[in-house]
Length: 374
Ligand SMILES: [Zn+2]
Image (tube, rainbow, N blue to C red; front, side, top):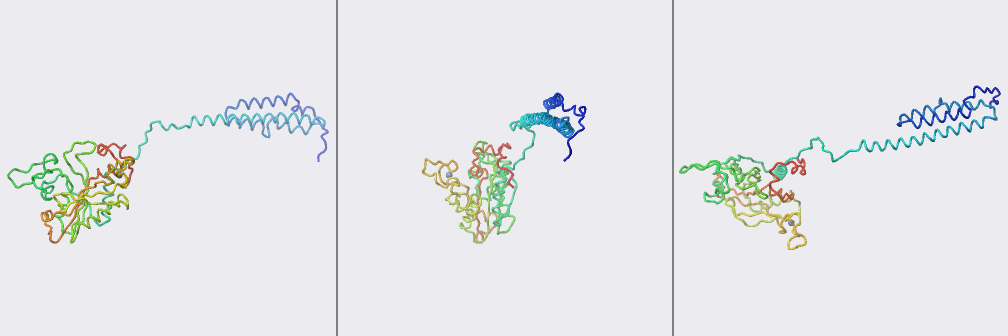
């Protein structure tokens, strides 16, 4: 222990006079109050409480006092330092609160403001659905075949056993590009009314066995309204091979429906008539929304199937031997089946699209929810 300080010099301890301590304290408090932000306050803190601050220096001087004056001076300096550190703490909290409030205002994001970011586009659901159907058939060994949209009348009608007096050939249904030359054995030109001419072209071009799927745009003279459009998309399939029967048709369509709508969806065939197939049928599937539960139950109406329990998908059947003959395929050796349906219709009940016009108007707000499925 060091001996008591005997060399007490009143001049050196000038800084420990009460008024001097009070002056230092007031100066420190004024500097703290004047600090405008946390950075300034930090600088004030270093200057007023650091090792070289006036009060710290004064504190060091206490050791030089005579023993009887030490206690009193120590108390004065200690009180002053306590007041300064309290004021610092209070000002610190005040400035932090101010900063937090300012950050909330300055960094707030108004999510309702318009922005100029380009949003991701989307593929048209007709394209993605059509490709998905193609995938199902390609996985079964089918090829995708395409053909012209402007087609000869013979390929569009005659080769498909649609006689010249068939109602489908009248001006009400078909866009005629060129009429057949009168008195001459020359076919007219039409916008194809179905993708069946692609099947005919395939049969004319190649020898069976043939397994093709023909997606594409077709044209009918309908007005554009909620349920009709003059341009729509079809997918048709054709299989020609030895020994094909209705059972093969049934199994193929059943697989397609299950692949598109789920394994527990049943299908049925209803007798129908088409000139190019014999026998012909209509393919129905159990409503994938209500599973038939809405039938006869007014409490649970189903918009998808109109509470009928079944949804009509499209026409099918065994290829008419007359069509095979017209295409140079021997009906004694080969048989085949065909199926066709509209993609728009499938999109309507698959995704509850209620208005056909939404599909053709090209508004990106319609396609966007379907995303970028590829
Ligand atoms: Zn239903």
